[in-house]
Amino acid sequence: MTNETLQELIESWFPNPEFDKISEVVQQFETDEVSEKNVEPPKPINPSLLEFSEEGSQFLNITVQPKQFYTLMSQLKNAEQTQFNYLFCLTGVDWGEELGVVYHLESTIHRHSIVIKVKTKDRENPNLDSVYDIWATAEFHEREVFDFFGIKFNNHPNLKRLFLTPDWDGYPLRKDYVDEINMVIK
Image 1 (cartoon, rainbow, N blue to C red):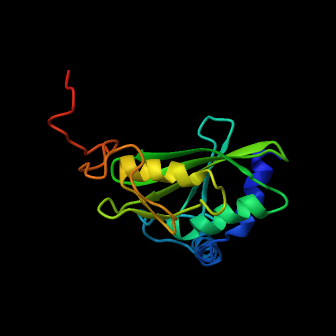
Image 2: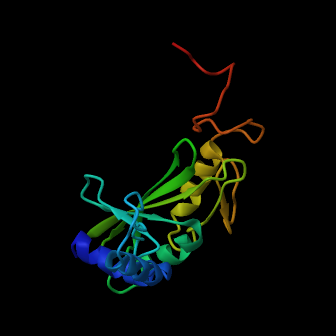
């Protein structure tokens, strides 16, 4: 399946209810005479609740909001057309203002791959849904992300530090992490 076909399929799972309303406004705006020169037309809205890109890679990249995340992941694994049965990488990321997780999935049946990104702006109490019940390997990967980034995974069966001691203060892979004793500054 090509990335374009895969995108069309996944877009159909998450239609944006605001798309039709905004499209009507844009069409009306284009047909009306506008007397002011500085009035800008309404910006078109994404027809899907997901954001797609290829970012110069061979994989289709999807950015999903946390509230659609678990449903998307479940459908990607269980839908006959996709069957992403292999989670081969789960990585925590600090994008500066947002924390998130990047998932690399592959279908060993259909031989296609995809990248899923989910982000949260809540740096004080970051929470995302766990996917350990979809892909068992996520259990330890999520513990690692919790350990180094402090992202908590809802419904995780054993969320505790994996590499660092339980009394470790902070999350060392965050960009705002400071450790005066252990950091080497060149």
